[in-house]
Amino acid sequence: MATVTAPLPGARVENEGQRIRFADLLRWSVDHKVIGLQYFVTSLFFFVVGGGLVMLVRWELLTPALDLTGSGTTYNQLFSIHGTVMIFLFIIPLWGAFGNYLLPLMLGAKDMAFPWLNAFAFWLIPPAGVLMILGWFVGQTEAGWTSYPPLSTLFSGDGQTLWAISLHLLGLSSILGAINFIVTIRNMRPAGMGYFQMPLLAWAILAQAIIIVMATPFLAGALTLLILDRVAGTSFFDPANGGDVLLWQNVFWFYSHPAVYIMVLPGFGVISEVLSIHSRKPIFGYRAIALSSLAIALVGFTVWAHHMFTSLQPELRIPFMITSMIIAVPTGIKVFSWLGTIWAGKIRFTSAMLFALGFLSMFVIGGISGVMLAAVPFDIHVHDTYFVVSHLHFVLYGGSVFAAYAAIYHWFPKMTGRMLDERLGKIHFWITYPAFFFTFFPMHLLGMLGMPRRVAVYAPEYQALNVLVSISSFILGVSTFIALYNMVRSLKVGRVAGPNPWRALTLEWTTSSPPPPHNFDGDPVPFKNPYGFGTEAAHLYLEAIESHSGPSAPPPAVTTALPEPAPSGD
Image (cartoon, rainbow, N blue to C red; front, side):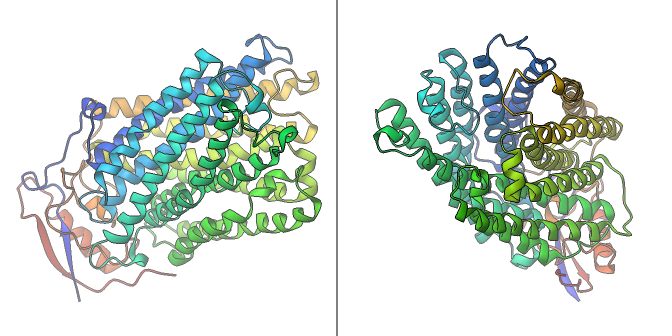
């Protein structure tokens, strides 16, 4: 028999939820829940900004001529800032939102390890975003989100310098947040929660944080050299004066390929949570999924040069081709484990589950095209074509954004105490899914036919596919506003969620929705297997919690004798 102490949801005196007003998001706060929502709202704002920019790009590409922007410079600025905003000001901060809000709750902690540092990390983001946008008034960057020299050193506009300073601030924010995540996971797990009893989202956040701490300083170094070349007359990237333009490519991609996993790993954790809970099935291969996240974090540092096959020395291509294919193995382990999880499950096709299943299909397509690009001959053939654009978006939109939508539909009730409208959520999914597919899948064909990326004027034979892509992208943009409307509407009139609407077993669902100021009354003791659905122990655990969530004010915790749950693992 095991003694399980569960914080009681619904206790209206001891455990009253903390309602966070919009005005609270404009103030300094060290509460991880407020900070998480600050990240969330900020990232959604920049999602709309970045999405608006790409709508202009696709409008321009409706015809082969230069119609809308009037100049190649303006077009270059649009796609350069679109890519930068979506990566550094949307998806990375969005995972910071879920990490900040959920990690202490999942670990049964009162807050993050370093609350003040947590707040400081967030408040570096708004000024960084302002600097990025200010570039429009002083000659915005037009060198692409990768900003290769000599383009990024020759352009005279100060927007390129502001771009580099902005990324410096965002990188510092990421590093400080990652340190906080690592220390919180290391030091603030409750008694009874070993590493292999942690939720898989915590494992994913840990792997992401390790990458950030190890890789982001390299980006900071590259940005420092770029700024010095631009403002101090140095020549780190000027071959005429002893510099090397390939230095930027090596250092930039040593950060930026691991950064792909910074953007995707938390999504992997979200998918593990959503698929298990909404299938009512124990996770298949818990340890394999957890350890594969660390494998991705480590092997990801050995593949950066596959972005440089066309400029790399021929004898170095084969080793990087091999490592680029090996990195697909731990990701494949996750995919097969997720399929094993939902196999014969009692699947509930909620909005969260639909987006999780959509993630599976779209991310697999992105993974297949990634293996194709890992092969040197094929990569050289499609280098700098729309095939690469398609692959990138199947991984980052089909992966990260679909997983983010699953996370929103799954944890919005915990954050706000209100359920999102499932009807609107399903409309959102069934518009997003085909619109995304027809936006990006035809780009594979455009790339193999030879259409280069980052061009506004193209050969007329590519127009039909570009029209299909642009119209689909407009529909995809509209679908975003369905989700935003659903969130705003549900804050006012959404059905009250209750503490545990999904009948989950992880600790964040054992406190009120939204949680009280210090998350829990007393020190929570976790259920030994957070994915142990279908066991007698899980049934009694949920029954014990739900029996104390009525209108009366119970004591802050209940101790229930339960059968020892099966250990988590494979």
